[in-house]
Length: 131
Image (cartoon, rainbow, N blue to C red; front, side, top):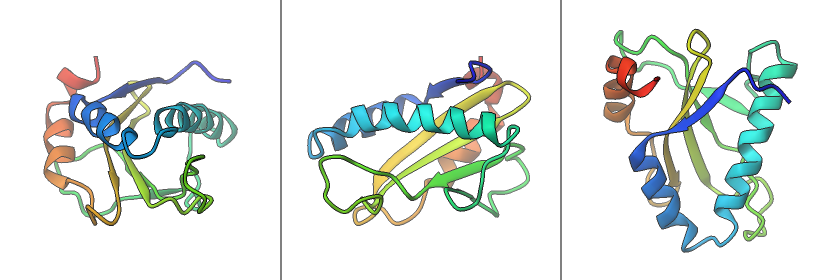
């Protein structure tokens, strides 16, 4: 497994993950597995991610200089719906800084789309967050 990339999380992401983990007991464990798979996918794909698993979010504005992805297919062990658990993970990929920065996690029925303001704020202040 590649150790080139560092995985970091936004503080609000951590709070969202903990809150959702109260309803889905294996979520934190499943997220750890997701991170390993993401690193392997980057290594196998020569630092590129496939559209079948990682959906790049378009139209975030000119201040967002990094690709931002949404993970829709996520397997949660405690939900019997396979990879259609309806959890969404949003992350920024900075190849230059070798950072994967998770910005948001949510359950689709409670929150339909990503928080674009949060993404824009992080990207415009990336020097702070990508250290």
